[in-house]
Length: 184
Image (cartoon, one colour):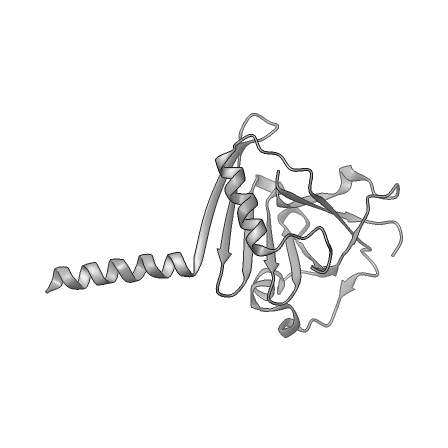
């Protein structure tokens, strides 16, 4: 009788994991001779993906919330969150994002030139009154205790200094550079 309960419990645990969450671990070499770890959690039922980049002071967490239509990135070194609308042609659908992750794991040397430049104005983009219902609970959990800035996807222009940008997203697949602009 106990064995039947254990088997049922194991089946229930694995069944929940396969239908709800998918977790991908990507380990790749960084420029300093060490390794960079990215962990991607996809919730198929709630329609979002969370990407954690573990890289010391350059660490970040990015939420792709397809249900609410927003992307939020929290950059550890800047102690701030940056949010942008997902209505841009460069943002892949969730199933396409999962395919990119699968290909990246299968082909360790895969590199994509898909890159999004996000510009924000430190003085004029600060969101002071946040409607968390609009952004959804994954973004609220990520950003509720740090300043939140609204960013806009732009074509890289001459007024953005790339060395002053924070890199988030899914490195090597869909990079996001968050840059302070000189104008709003």
